[in-house]
Image (cartoon, rainbow, N blue to C red; front, side, top):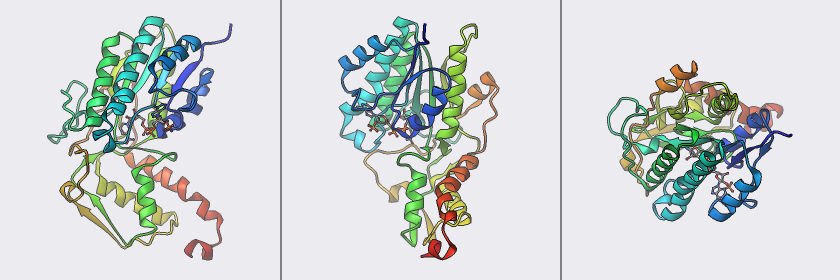
Length: 308
Ligand SMILES: NC(=O)c1ccc[n+]([C@@H]2O[C@H](COP(=O)([O-])OP(=O)(O)OC[C@H]3O[C@@H](n4cnc5c(N)ncnc54)[C@H](OP(=O)(O)O)[C@@H]3O)[C@@H](O)[C@H]2O)c1
């Protein structure tokens, strides 16, 4: 009999795109697009789960437009709260496992110390409230589930701060970036690698895998300004066509957004690192690699063309 598949949701997103090749090495992978399975439709989701009978579900799908979530509250709630709850209850009822993702935005951002898993979540925006509800539904389902809280996600695929900086730096002499929100830029490569290891543990039946809620981030911390400065440093070294002359640190108050953001997004990763014996890398490592990969095609061009 052939092995039951892993169901990956959100494969077209930043994280899903990094997860797919690693998961496909472990088991047959089914990764429906939004056109093939709209997660807004609870009946369609249920029917797909019942038909597919996956051994496990990796849920990288989410409503991630933090500012729009303030007005599209129902849609954010559907994707970030109801869907994980439905996945977890299906998994609990059918002996399947679940890998789910959440965010540092479940915290209010007060204080200076990194947030631990047992700190009380107090989200300050609609996105954070919907993600927190999703966590709670998963935890109370009784499913064999991991929830990885990650922060400031970026990768090669999809829209993110790192790629926005490269674009702005190539088109504007002055770029202003918020310097009073602190966290750790987290690459999809790191999240996908840790997820693949946890899935491996979930799949090896005799392994009493300690599931539950974990914080995942690389080591070190940075403000968005520090992060941008490092991106530009690496971009310059890689020959990226920067016109940027001045990177200006600003306060959050000078960059009003529809959704407030927590000032302290630091995540304490002690639980994950000690439970699974992981040595997490400095945040700069994957940022440097990502900039290098994005700049790589430039190295194929003759020097004159690079400058024009
Ligand atoms: N981005 C961050 O900075 C950040 C920070 C902390 C935590 N997280 C969490 O990390 C996880 C991955 O985030 P990400 O940045 O990779 O997300 P993303 O790039 O925005 O991707 C979201 C995925 O969800 C899918 N999706 C959304 N609505 C759908 C629907 N109605 N039906 C089917 N699919 C739908 C999208 O499909 P389409 O391509 O069709 O839209 C896409 O594949 C999420 O749980 C997120 O909350 C993200």
